[in-house]
Length: 67
Image (cartoon, rainbow, N blue to C red; front, side, top):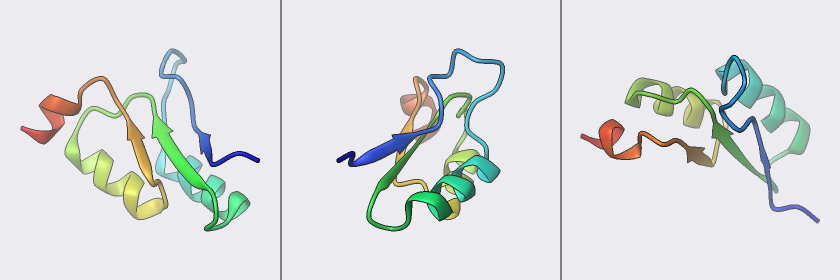
């Protein structure tokens, strides 16, 4: 079976949203990880996605977000 599900690649018109993550978490339960990716550009969004149920964050801006 799968260990994680993922929102998007980031190449679409929008990326991960809090609504997406909540729905995915409700659907897969607590036994599967949820990776949020796409359009994650700041720490506030990271915090919101983690609070919504994401267990991993995929972003090309990780260094800038941490600074």
